[in-house]
Image 1 (cartoon, rainbow, N blue to C red):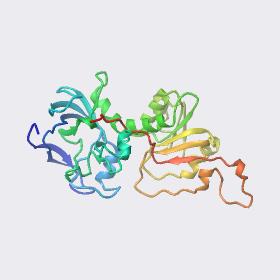
Image 2 (tube, one colour):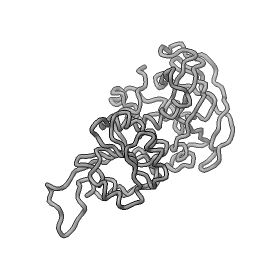
Image 3 (cartoon, rainbow, N blue to C red):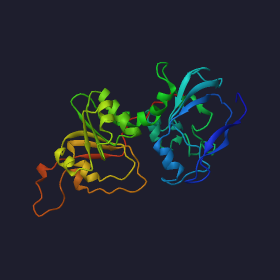
Image 4 (spheres, rainbow, N blue to C red):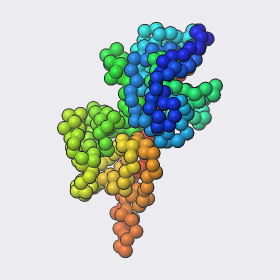
Length: 320
């Protein structure tokens, strides 16, 4: 250890659904492979809201949210090789994993067989609660710290560490690019980044939103088309259109209707995580309308897939 454990100012939710309060939290001493980061910016992710109100259950309180962290290294442990004091760095939604299971060795630490250690609302390997970026400083192992390029301002970089990579990952995994038609459901924090990234990759992007209120924004971000899902005609006009649908909304969707918008062997990826259960008619996955007096032949049915996340890496921590 190179320093003593300390306490730092933070904002915490003392209980589920309670307003955030100013407080202090403990930060561990800087260890052999740790970096101490002075936090300059922390994005507000919708998952922070879900967890602070215990919408997903199993919340640990008091809770300090924040896993879109950008800041400056102010101290390093003696074994740190990848960073130096003054470096511009970021921390996403994980701060540790077992590092020895097959998934970790494959660079899939978010699928750690022993369970990844989340940046907040989790217990670390010592059984201590983790606290997030709504604070002035954080101590993180260098293996779960990423460098932020000099040309990218810290305030812009912070949201990329969760929202950005959450949508980039499935777009990359499902090969979004020229010749593919991609639909983005919702134009919020995740959605607007999905539009920009899918467009940058060369895909033809369509936004599917409840209304046309954000149409100008969507088109300016790179969408070629914009439709309102409150209009039943949308689902008729776009049936069988898309190679890939990225759903970014955190409320339950009528999945059967959206699956009908996919091409044969198309993919729908859900990166929003509603607090309530969603329902699905399995006939939507095999492309049939469901049992009827005169069902279509098996040859005419269009298989589709629905995923809750892309299996590609959320981000690539440094190897230790």
